[in-house]
Image 1 (cartoon, rainbow, N blue to C red):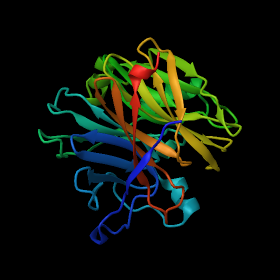
Image 2: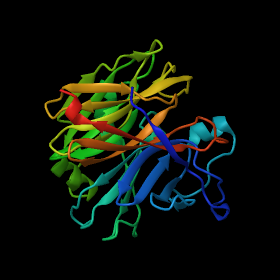
Image 3: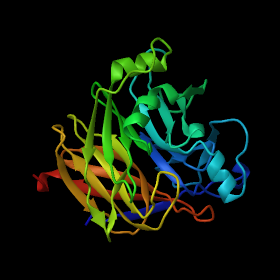
Image 4: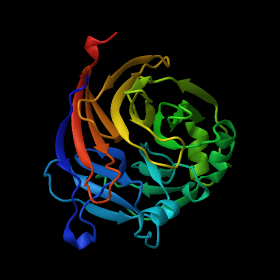
Length: 305
């Protein structure tokens, strides 16, 4: 069991037009700044880890989403992955990349957000069509549902999330150099290099499935997974709990730890000190009236083979 602690809820100032983020689905930490996407918004949340005050918002797409749940679900871009990209051409300080899940045609959009030397956002925000990247993935995964993204060495990695009916979780790997060239508009979308499946077990009889991932030094990576009783890549379902997992640089599943709080963890960020992982997690309440939570946990790798 991994003991987690609630640091705060993701509240927003009245001037933002929203009281809080509710469906947090991706998390990146840059110094003391936290960037959070929500899968039911057109917005990026920005929070200061040090002061605990209300956050701020950055628009990502034009227009407003419908207010009713069913119409909003049908129209949303379903941003499920947020990752930090290391410096590349035109982005000397790196960038953030927010990706749609790909589970529906309108969910095949991404947003590239440049960063400055202080790790804050700068203009311009660039919208990217993901359909060329996702098309070959959908052939292999008819219920495509990309929920995690990260750069690990020379690899650009995506995490395919399964569901209760088809619990196929996969790490899909692209060449990072080719991916950079595509993001810069210099080459076509790269083909995937490999796809490795992972069986993550169950919680209360419901399969655990990927919800996010983050790279570790040396080639390994950490991930979050949730046991959600949903039969496809569109519908929500009751959550039986979440877990944090660790994959070694050789692709071996090194460990899987259920989190102590029953919640749907959808985003993970990690910093490493010696052999201790310091984890930050965000949750999706599946209720627009309930704010998402920011959680923390530590994992001592020296205690595990």
